[in-house]
View 1 (cartoon, rainbow, N blue to C red):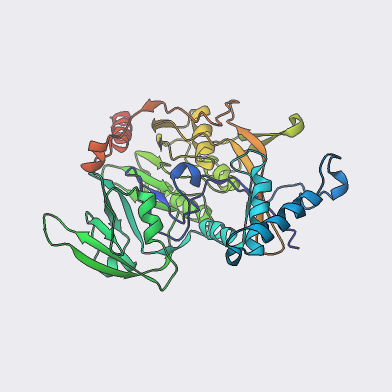
View 2: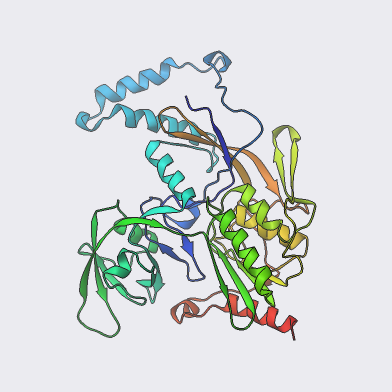
Length: 415
């Protein structure tokens, strides 16, 4: 059995898509869940205690008889009408999923080998799909931006293209998630999108061969007005190095102010969140973990606070969760940044993920976390300092009032 214990704080898209930009668009990919809320999950690396010891049946209370399990198993095997559809491994994995679900915690779950691989791929920022950002515009699935050099762009898909059908099935009325389910697929397989472009009355079919999509979790832009923008889509394997490079670039260019965009960022490695917050916070706890038995652990700032003197705005919304909320909450509590946008998701618990012998894994909630000021954000989220909402009209016109408000605030401070 692989006894390596993983503990991560992560809200991750198991649909293998990454929420991007204010538009709420996503990258089409390989994973599978139903909506943004249900995609939020947690994981964190390298913790100090061991969860590898599994309780033996002797520790089970006296009113539990495991013979009942096999009684149910045998009855299902003998009585179910479609016997040819019965698969022992699926029954077994299903029972393990039910065991984890019986605790009533949405973040404690058993993942079979396929789900585990998808989960690990998410952490690596690697997906299988066509490489395009999409959203809903005027009640239609619309391409926001094809990613340069990737399958969608290679066949001629353009920003603004409206998707009328997917493999011949109408896409009208579909949500983004529903469209993704139909478009996703493994490398080498094909999907045909029926596209309406501009005011043309002649839809055209584009057949796209899916491929492996590698998405950087950190992108940056030094604007001509002197504002430096850092967009963090996840706290993944590549985030530490990419963010460190961004900090070096900031020190070199000395901008007037910083915009840290954490909107639709579902989370990531806790250690990465602490390291990121530490570039603004010189000393003190970044996050406080509350375990059972009233045990507490404070995770302290670990960086050199190289960004502490730069005026900073953090953009957040309902898709900002877990590690994103840790960074936003810490910078708010230490008054190192102004939060602009909408209330965050409210994911305030910590999970460990243990790799199991057959490639499956078990994720268990082991703690809740608080901001440095002691604010428990679970289920309630973090309220921004300045609330700015984005309307459907804004989305249709490609206007970002949250980003514009951040620019207005930072440029005003420098006058």
